[in-house]
Length: 357
Ligand code: NQM
Image (cartoon, rainbow, N blue to C red; front, side):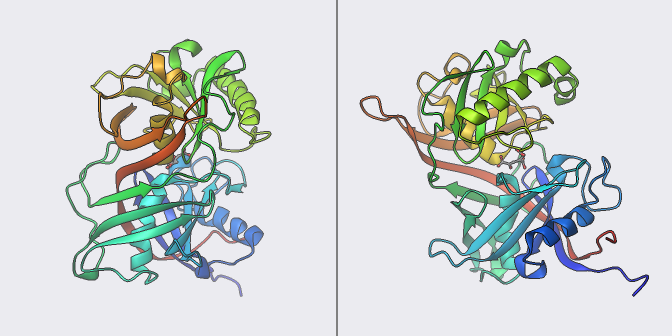
């Protein structure tokens, strides 16, 4: 038929400091090749402006969540995260996204996958990309998702209802290289995975302060090349193989805090510099700062007590609760618990009309 556009049921949501298209798995084809081809047309990729689709021309606004009922005994729903490349015809599943995760519980209630309580509802989520789990708790007065509230997160104007997300320790090792410190491309790093494979580097060891604006850092070709070399070497040591075309590991530059937090960060995801910091990226930074002998030790100021610490980033801060267990008699540390407050908001609900194939 000529002239008619195909349509797919879709909800656009802000999840934390990112924005993405949320789908029920049942509303998409199960064939990953056909699904990815459709999602490129939905988001308007490849095109730096994504002018003909939902994407916003930046990796943080070119994201997709696919949600379905879970068959796993410890989960209510499965959440598959897809990163839709802005400039290349590429959709990847090799990373997770803790920001879009914030919208998964509300979306699951909106679509009837989970029955809401009158008051607040907890949704147990299996993150398909990593196999890890999270529990999201959010207000549902009268059994309906409340989006307005008083929680404020840096990088998002205004306030909204809090989505409290707790993460039990993931299945993989906290220190994937088996060491607290490595040399990657001549630079001292600590490679951590507390939900997001992340390479921690002192900003000063790369000749920058770590307080620069993301745009200024992105424009620094010498820095970009150093970060690329560090990622390639660290990625191999972390068991991720050749990471030249993947979005993980992230590289987080660390500098001393300036506003009472524990550390300042500038995080490369992996080429663009994050305007704030990813949730799981922050979980990895927070756990990494607590590792005795790690590169964070010379830079961070950890709170004297308690699990909560504040990570400063380009547009404010992210508070996160994190604790690790230091191994006895030389054993490596392991993650214990991580929890964070995010917000999420439904922006539209309806049908998306993808660019014709
Ligand atoms: O680390 C960006 C984001 C993310 C990922 C990225 C994220 C996380 O802010 O949990 O949320 O690192 O690619 O959405």
